[in-house]
Picture (tube, rainbow, N blue to C red):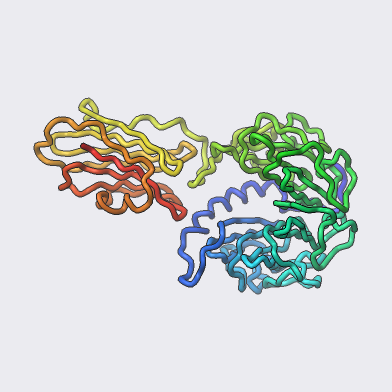
Length: 486
């Protein structure tokens, strides 16, 4: 590795992978509890992590924090460490959050940015170097649409496509043509039409609306992607990269998603974190081996992650702590499948094979099996008729292929049911509400996970044609299929 005048931060260390997985499981908490009666739902729930602290944005626009609070980075008016979330003081209507080493940021719906925590290099942007235990407004900044936090610098994208930065500037990471630290926002020189922003240890990235990426700041490993290892105090274009749709800044390397979901990487590669099958640093982008259909990416200190369209997560780079999630501690220079499946219900474990058709008791008699898909969940419903009842088996599988619900129910019918039923009629992907109302009025079973509940309901036993509703609710939505047995 090339030498660095600053120590490597622990916030970007390999253990952060485990922390991110823990944060992912907080999604149910972020949306599960109803907001106060006066609250307006404005925010997409989100999480962020600093060196030793975590922050979360709830759907009611409040911000919560926990962990190390030595520098007041939790924003609750104290410097007391917290092992459970506490509300950041006075913040409402937040729509985005970011976390640096020891400071935190929040973007409000009115376009202002607020900051709290350590301020030794001006990273709070309030014109001082005084640390703050509660949020203060970043001076003179309006019309912000996105924020990012590096180790000890901060960035905000404005609605006119320009970028404001403040805090540490030792490598030129503020992009204003100097290496002077700033306690209030300055404009990044020569940058326009930006649509997204990211920050690494000492470098910054911006995505433009033409699909190109600009970079500036520290470039000791080639993480700016301009073909050199020269630090830049103003933005330079990442070489050869077009049609980018997403990007990420690691500690010393950078990633971008290009056309057809391919992933490109540049910068430090000592542990294979560029994913090109080597451990050679690259000062221009190289394609990550074998990845297509990528929808999101993330970068740590020495490892990288890619989320695929099918909900699988692929990881590459250093794995000494198991941060690749593949069940080993073997580092990889090309992507490997993580034992983590992302979807509405976040779950762990190797995805099982597709579920087999459901058995019903006395399966030698007439059984009809129907399948459907609603809200990306797969349903299998097997219907079996006896002289006095209709027996239904229901199985629900999440987008990652894991069974979250497997139940059966016996619905009494007329003692003289007549001929065997014709195939069941399936109303696939019915909207919320139908499953809880007529004709599915009788709750038979409920199960699943803490964040995603599956259920099986039926019509009343006196109905001439029994109806079964099998569905999933979670995250404020509900979808199901309805099976009518003739």
